[in-house]
Length: 193
Image (cartoon, rainbow, N blue to C red):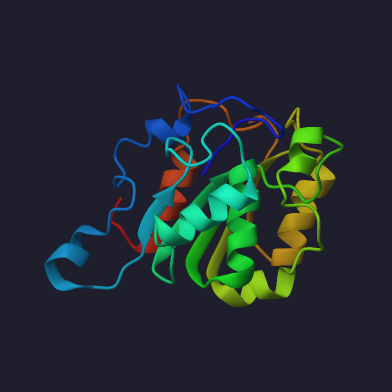
């Protein structure tokens, strides 16, 4: 899932690393062994280039889409960037998933009107439920993110006891390549390098 900068009303999909992940399974696809042997490995779900909420990150659109259209379940790895990370966390409060991979995650509406209107920040976070519903929680954050204070990114990692990959030079992770993410996913899914 991705939305670009918090509060954005435009899609950041073009030129973003989410489209760069060319060596990785396609949207909603299963591990190649799943098709052959029914191995039960997790499947990859990304939201951003999808039709539902690609422009705005409204909870009332994204969470039902994740459940009804993408069928996110206990075999699903949800990769969420920015507002997508927020959606992944809210989804995991009430649904079991294999993993959530959070990129540029935060905890508040940041004083932004669009974030406030998204619906994600009108109640407390249910950190214990998220942890109970996810076999794996990984987070990527950067101290030089121009949109998100490090304090909020660190709070997510602390509250979720996430495996945190902390950077100081990635900004909002809007670069076009993200090798570390691919490595982490392959390792999580035990895919040969």
